[in-house]
Image (cartoon, rainbow, N blue to C red; front, side, top):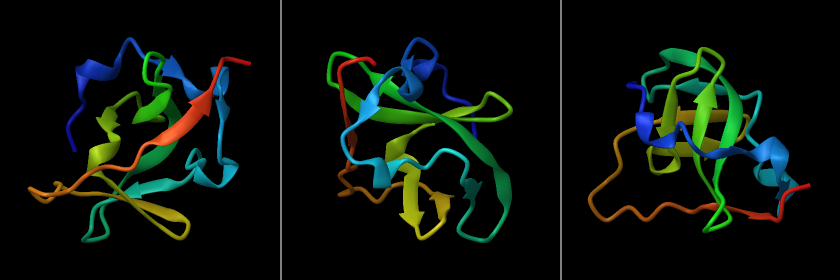
Length: 96
């Protein structure tokens, strides 16, 4: 997994209200499909213009876009997206 600097200027989701609290993946482990542990998800990052979560940050500061994530039960997997993959973004409402 590589750090993606595009997301360094985004707002933290903790400054926003998630529309669906069930989509909160903070605190979950981020794994490769082969089971390699990348770390724990520390924060979800919001594009304030679109009002969507577009990236995550790990506890060690690395960031990646949600298009690389697949959520299964209590784990989140990092993988290269398929060519026709369309990410589902978590909606947020105005800052709290």
